[in-house]
Amino acid sequence: MITPRRILAALLAAVAATSLATAPVSAHERGVRPLPQAHSHNDYEHTRPLQEALDQGFTSVEADIYLVDGQLLVAHDLADTRPDRTLESLYLEPLRKRVLANHGGVYRQRQEFQLLIDVKGDANSTYAALEKRLYDPRYSFLFSLYAFGHVQKRAVTAVLSGGRPKDVMLGQRFRLAFYDGRIKDENDLGIGSDPRVTPLVSDSWTGLFTWTGAGPFPAEERAKLHKLVKDAHAAGQRVRFWATPDTAGPAREALWKELVAAGVDHLNTDDLPGLANFLRAR
Image 1 (spheres, rainbow, N blue to C red):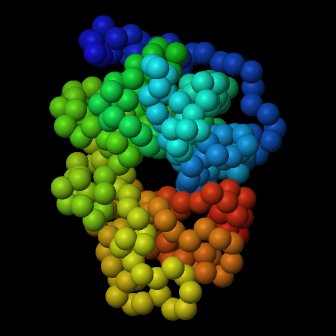
Image 2: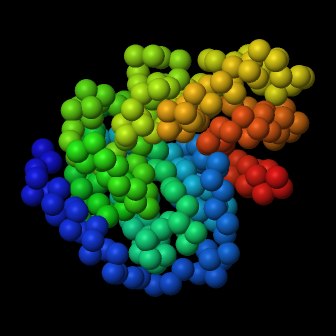
C-alpha cells in the first residue's frame, strides 16, 4: 500500500533531485535532436535497451513487465524472463542518470518522454509492485504526478498498457502512472475520456483499418483516421497505433506519411534507424 508518508517522501525527493547532478552527458548525446513522434515498440528486444532509442532521438519506449518472485522482469514472454533484466536495471536507473545529467530532462531540449509499460500477468499485483518502484525516492522525481485532480509534468510520463487495473487507478488521489486507453472500445477509457487519467489512446491499426500502405489510401479510411486524431487531440489525448506495417519499403513509408499527415502522435516501430531517418528527412 502506498501511504501518505511514502507520497511525501516521493515529493521531497523530486524537489531535492532538481539540485543534483551527475557526470555530464557526452557530446553525442548533446547533439541528438529528439523526435516527438518516434516510439520504440518492444524496445527491450534491442541489443542495448533504451540506449539505442535515445541515440536515435526517440521520445517514447515500450517495456513489457512480469512480476516474478517480487521482481519486475522485462521480456515479451514469461519464458524469456531473466533475473538480471529488471525494469530498474534496463529503464529506471538509466533514465535517472540521464535526467540528472541533463539537469531535469531526458534530453536537454526538455522534450516530453514516455515510458510505456505493458503489464503482463495479474494487473493488480503487478501494478502494486510497480508503484513501489515508482514511489522509491531514487526514481520518484522522474515521473509525472497526478494529485487531487491535477497533473504535474516531469521528465518522464509512465503510461500503463496491457493489464491495466482501471478501477484501482480511477480511485487513486495520487498516481505516478497513467492509463493507455483503447480507441475502439468505448468502455475502456477511449477517446474523450479524462486526459488526466488517459493521456494516451492506442489500438491495433489492422483492427481499425484495412489499408496497409499498398495502393491508394481509401478516402473513407483517411477521413476516419483524421477524425479519430482530431477528436483525441480535442480531448487533450495523444494517439498511437500498433500492428502497423514495419517492413522497410514503399508501403511502410506511404503509411508513415499518412500517419504524420493526420497528426498521429507516436509512430510505432522496431526499426529505430529506419523511423529516425524517415522523420528527419521530413
